Amino acid sequence: MFLSRRSEWFGNIRGDLLAGLVVALALIPEAIAFSIIAGVDPKVGLYASFAMAVTIAIVGGRPGMISAATGAMALLMVNLVKQYGIEYLFAASVLTGFIQIFAGQIRLEKLMSFVSQSVVTGFVNALAILIFMAQLPELTNVTWHVYALTATGLGIIYLFPLLPKIGKVIPSPLICIFTLTFITQYFGIEVRTVGDMGQLPDALPFFKIPSVPFTLETLLIILPYSLAMTIVGLLESLMTATIVDDLTDTSSDANRECKGQGIANIVVGFFGGMAGCAMIGQSIINVKSGGRGRLSTLVAGIFLLIMVVFLSRWISIIPMAALVAIMIMVSIGTFSWTSIKNLRDHPMSTNIVMLATVTVVVFTHNLAYGVFVGVLLAALFFANKISRFMYVESKLDEENSHRTYEVHGQVFFNSADVFSAQFNFKEVVDKVTIDLSMAHFWDISAVAALDKTVIKFKREGTKVEVIGLNKASQTIVDKFAVHNDPAQVDQLLGGH
Image (cartoon, rainbow, N blue to C red):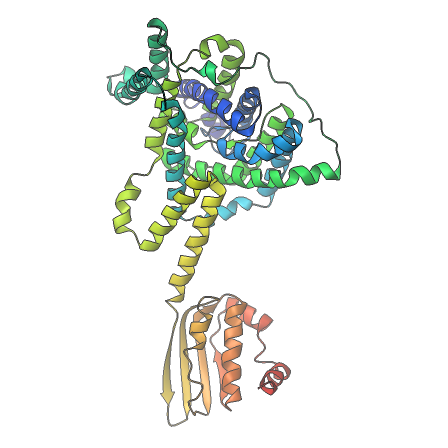
């Protein structure tokens, strides 16, 4: 345990320090932009990003993943801030944290197992598109200098790593920031800078209990917003953790991540910040810049605070073109380009799920809606596919006037009608045996279909025997079936 924790913190010191610096620089304009979206002062997003990163580095379940203020969460706060003010936002952030801890306690992260790979691919592609779209305002109605600087930045990002020795030591996004800042200052090029995004804070955050009435009315006001932020926050965090797991070939603790996100949001709320969650863009920047351990996340948070409070003069002159170039790199690296090629090879249902997830997320800017639609479609396609594997074979013993039906496959709500349609109730035989040894009954719809089948045979005067139920199927049939209850059968038969 000790060696594992030591490796998480100090197994990649140089890489984590440099990656943390790059992430801190990339976090500044993002945090300011998300604060503007939420309708709050820029320092709220910056304080949130600092507190979130530092706390999650210690208590999170995924080393190397960056959590901070995010656009997905900011969109959920707009109406709360407009109607009730910023103090209610702080209270909602604290409540979000407690709900996320509760979600961790009840192992809610296991719901991620219902998210198929096609939904994850759609989620990733949608985020890549949103990240790119978020850069377009910085590339619209600007001078040619911005395009030249952005192109130069992309060239540095992709070509610097090709240099021998030094290209592998220093993260290319960091070189991009320093180079473009030097160019704009040396040549006096007038372009939009980080300082133009909003005023940077000049003081450290401090502990403060939200100034809201501690009443039931307050709870009812903030609860809907907290529930929404809990769902979106955990969804984005767990999805991001899955992606970082794949990028680094390591595993993470989803349950600990749920609780860690909760603890971090509680800290954020008490230090004047807005609720946040994992950031896929910054997490990928961290990984691609060499960050692997918890130290990179901690350093990102600490560097962020130091820069915006004590080095704001220097940070404010960084051209936005440098950060746009980095985010375009993130967008290109995030998008699953193989998914385009796979459209030709993968099943139509898989493609529909992926494209639906992308479409809903891009048009609503809400990750939860997109994932919900994707999971729902995937479940419907799966249910339809499984129902096709349910069939019934039969054989007749003419000498004994005995028909045996052998049921194969899964019987549930989507295949229950198909199951019932496989039997010939008008055939004149003395006895029918329904062999279920190769079948499985999943729900009360399946049990109702069995009841319907048995009772119909009995109504025709045929003796029915049901055999071969496995233990799980027998349990649900014994609990809900009525065909073995003479009173229930007589009542049903009497109704015809």
